[in-house]
Image 1 (cartoon, rainbow, N blue to C red):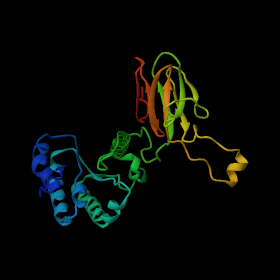
Image 2: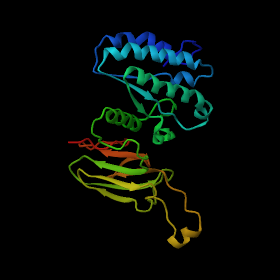
Image 3: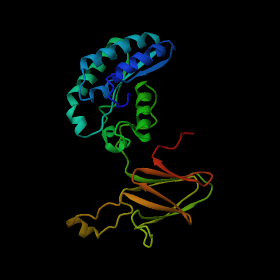
Length: 264
């Protein structure tokens, strides 16, 4: 990607000129070619020229590898995507045509609604999160005809997840992120995660609840989506629903995007 510094170099043109020639000489088993989306999102873009460069790259790479993969790239829901939707659809239709001409496989990330969720995108709104990249890897894996490890198109799980990799049970207490004095814990705040276990709780696990008959006829209390977790006696971490808090084997604590535990 070329930084926005007033340059007029096309993103895909830059990539084609700089990378596909050495890539073609590697004799790879698998080559993934993704390009054009950043171009069509620019204010001024010749989509036909972008498609021609993509075709040239595929024509150069396909004969030099055992399998070429193309992608219909994911998009982030929002006004930018809506504005440039006709361009994107033109590009993605062309991707399908290029794949047919050059015997390539197509990974349809554009058609996966879960990847359009803004929470699957980094703060710069251009790059995917770690969780989303895992889904893309699984999509490629399955497109190659390999047995699925997960269902990569499944809706994002809005759960609080805790994974304990240590050799002893760990006690947690959950507070509202904004209650910095931590005098009063949230409802159902005390949790114990057994050694080697992973526990998941619903998004509203730590939200105050009214009586069921009252909630039926009134608006539910706002969901607590970000909390502070006290691990043991003094370690504190902030996390949101959909994230994973991990207690490592050495006792260190980390919070990040959720990914399924490694298969053994």
